[in-house]
Image (cartoon, protein in one colour):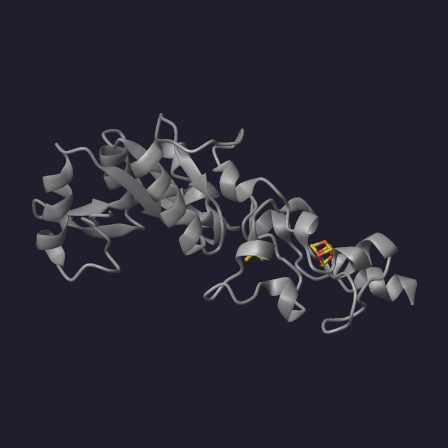
Length: 231
Ligand code: SF4
Ligand code: F3S
């Protein structure tokens, strides 16, 4: 179903041959899916994606140009959605979200990384049925409606007040900094790496990679202070 015209990490074309593909698409109906934050400092020159007409093509100008003409725009992954790791302090490149540089609706698929199913599922819905139901932050409800905590395999430990004191312990990892209670996404039922596991299943707290503000607003991932003060 997908005719992938331009992806700088997947396509074989290089240089102006590759960016010509972007030019060719402009007068056709297309969907723009952006990975990565948009660097705005120094007129966007911290992020040059190629060259066009003999000049450097910045991500900033490419997103502005292609985003204003696309049928739909998808921000894929934490950096595109809210700046993510690229916009973490001190953010010298002035990285911002795709929404910050476009005056239009952008479907948001946060996650570090975005799960392939969240992306292809949203794309398939757009192609087959139109825009999926979105929440107040433009995330598809079919993926981003329930928190990790709601469906966590360790939830019964939380409800009984049984907390892990260190990684690998049995029990809920809330006191090890788990961000499952504030992260709405379907990792517990979808899982990763071919639907095999998720962080909690490997005795690792959820670090909130699919929540807005990751990583700065999700720090610190693990705090031992709570545990020390109880011992
Ligand atoms: Fe909630 Fe995290 Fe505890 Fe699971 S491990 S029950 S997501 S706090
Ligand atoms: Fe990310 Fe938490 Fe899922 S760290 S992969 S949102 S379990």
